[in-house]
Length: 280
Image (cartoon, rainbow, N blue to C red; front, side, top):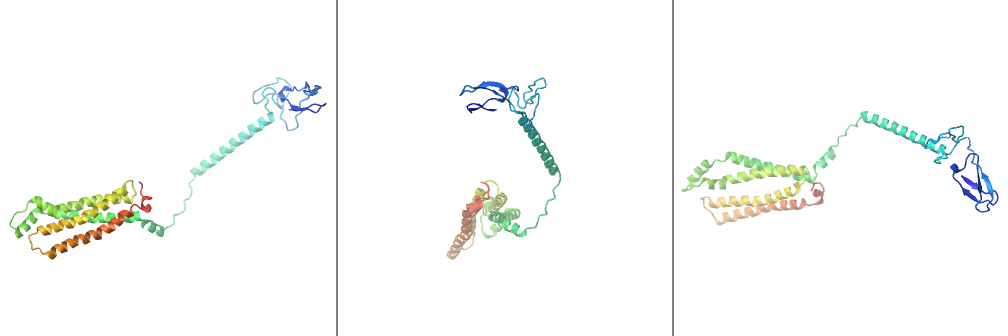
């Protein structure tokens, strides 16, 4: 509590619990005048108790106090703080109850509006287009290889070759010239379809796998035509210079027509529009 010397006007403070209800006589530290300090009387809005709610100090009599003489707690402030805490607890309980009711109550979901244009644009994403094109090419290669393997008959091929040549061709050479390519097509179709599926789903490592398949395709096309050229050369038929030039020109043109677009596509795979979608 604040005190003021009645003689010199010096001001100071003294703890409330050090001033009894009957007052306390003190000396002014400035003018050394003695005077009695009386505790301020509580107003109508004060809280007077005989037992402190904070430390449980009690006067064990009719004497009451608004400030605890033991711990110095203002009873009014303490009681109002407790009431505020209880009010906040009740409000929190009401909020939790309200939210729990909202969670258990089914909320009507708005009907999804059809967006065919947005779906169409999404399907035109380069990742979907590349994956779809690779899947279609792989399916064609797989079907061609499977049909070739099913229809492959080494005995019939050997009989046809005996009609045009005198020496007998081994089964291994027949397989290399007429059967191996079908197995390459079949394996290529399986690997390409798997890569296309992973790429379409934007899975990890599908981007380098797709790049590898493109390079393999660029290599297989000239290899295919070179094998055809070798088979034509080894065939027991007349060969002319123009025939050689046509076959070589065919190898160069077909390799260019297939290799250049695939090379451009392989470079496009490293564009940000693709790499930002595929998980690296």
